Image 1: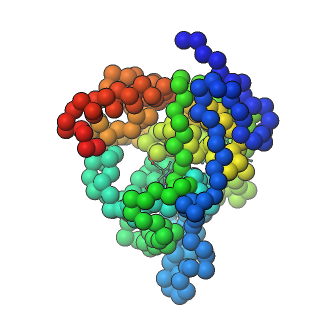
Image 2: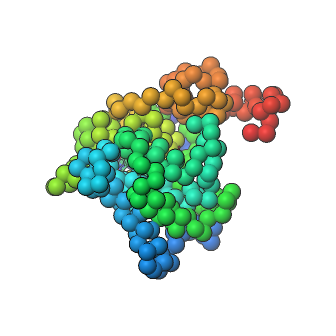
Amino acid sequence: MTRKRPELSKSGNSKVTANGGSGVGTSTLHQITSNTWRAPKDETIPTGKEGEIIRYGRELIVHTSKYLGPKGTIAKITNGMNCQNCHLDAGTRPYGNNFSGFITAYPKMSRRAGKIESPAERLVECFERSLNGKAPDTSGREIRSILAYMRWVGKDGKHGVNLIGASTEKLPYLKFAADTAKGNAVYSLKCQNCHGQNGEGVLSHDGTSYTYPPLWGNHSYNDGAGMYRLGNLAGFVKNNMPLGATYQNPQLTNEEAWDVAAFIESKPRAHQNQHSDWKDLNKKPIDFPFGPYPDSFSEKQHKYGPFAPIKAAHNGRSMSSVTNLQK
Ligand code: HEC
Ligand code: HEC
């Protein structure tokens, strides 16, 4: 296949890089509008006991490892990362993997688990996968407090209404597979300084949490985590990394974000047994990197793309199949 791809932008803090009409998703600057999600103001946290619980829930999101990490003061059940490492500003940042739509959507049919899940069960999944840890006691004070915080932070959400800036951005697909070699180049130039040559991150002086969290290896999220899907990682990185980038001032092109995400996902990490996940193969996201699939595309293509042909095949199938029409 012949194709022309733009070269990596060399400047670390370049604004959106124009990409010469090569078929790469163009980068548009996002403006704050009245439909943009904003987290509630701190003043709206109630006083008294109710407010204390909310604040403690937030504290656990921000400093998870201090309480629940390898040196945790309450329990030692997680890998040393903080929820906030991925849910930026305690899950309040537009396109920073925020919690805007979480609480109003649950209980919810989990497409992965194939059953109705409570909000607490959803939290457990991030403990076991994103924090490569153990399930916390869902009736304990910690989970109750995190849920109280989730109710507060998502209180202005409306079920079924997806405000601008919710969770992470879904970047347009590239026309070709994401390129791990090009991603390696982006990584060396724009990520390695903080996240380390081997993606190992940098621990804080007292060793209780990360100053720069790990991106792969045994201390990072495992291969059952949401971040292990290329689309989730690319969307997160595009609007938030390198540190200082925002959705209004991203520093990578979409293509660089896909490529560096591919490079990160090509590296080793802990394995999660996922045999009971995705019992209905039609519900599997197309960028889920482990088969079996309801189509004939390879695991490699499901991991790195190109995704458009897979999407088209799935759409074609659901159009021709009466039972799938309503999905
Ligand atoms: C390695 C990054 C990472 C870490 C660390 C992490 N998460 Fe997540 N979390 C994600 C991603 C990515 C998603 C979206 C997953 C998807 O859509 O498949 C997510 C989704 C969620 C959701 C569902 C949001 C919604 O709107 O449906 C909740 C709730 C959540 N995480 C809570 C937590 C909590 C609590 C912690 C800490 C105990 C945590 N996460 C740690 C990456 C992370
Ligand atoms: C200046 C330092 C810095 C640079 C450069 C940087 N990051 Fe980060 N990164 C951070 C910090 C700090 C966090 C955690 C943010 C928090 O906890 O609030 C983070 C979090 C992350 C996370 C989510 C947590 C995890 O460990 O999985 C990913 C993914 C990530 N960075 C990818 C990248 C990529 C890709 C690049 C290069 C394009 C990059 N970062 C460049 C500092 C940096």
